[in-house]
Amino acid sequence: MEQTQDAVPERANLRKLLLATFFSVLTCVSASIVVPIPYVPITMQSFVVLMAGLLLGARYGAVSQALYLLLGLLGLPVFAGGKGGLHHILSPSFGFLVGFIPAAFTAGYLVPKGPAPWWRFSLACFAATAVLYAVGLPLFWLNMNFVTAPQAGMTFVRTMKLAFVPFILPDSLKALLAGLLAAKTQAVLKSR
Image (cartoon, rainbow, N blue to C red; front, side, top):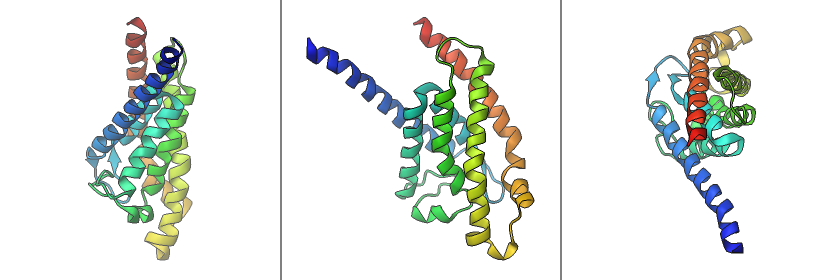
């Protein structure tokens, strides 16, 4: 009898770990959906990051994105544009890739635990997106000033023009859509 009780949490953890792996694969696939703009391309990755947090919770959502980052750093071509490898640490977009981990954690931490309107899920997504920018923008600025183009003297305003302004509308739409989809998914899962 005791083995059966111990097996239930182990199966739940294994299931969540498999789902985290699935979401890391989804993040890899979503990296290939690219709108190319200089320095940081627009992809569907942030949408998958939000969904990972909302559906897997804080810990396993973050694990899914840490696994994604690890796969890319090990050399698999999973980053936007089919890139990968340790050298990607020196790219301007790397800070946003690092930001996927705390963003997924934030979405999972703030997701409503019970039935809630879709906009509460979207609020969790907006907070997670803010965390993504809070990590990505300073690292973008540091990279541009000390690695990629130190002679250009990247200012705060130019950083915002390059790495924030082009993304705020698409990321807002992704946050709204992720919130709506997560609310519907949670309602379907609760009814089963």
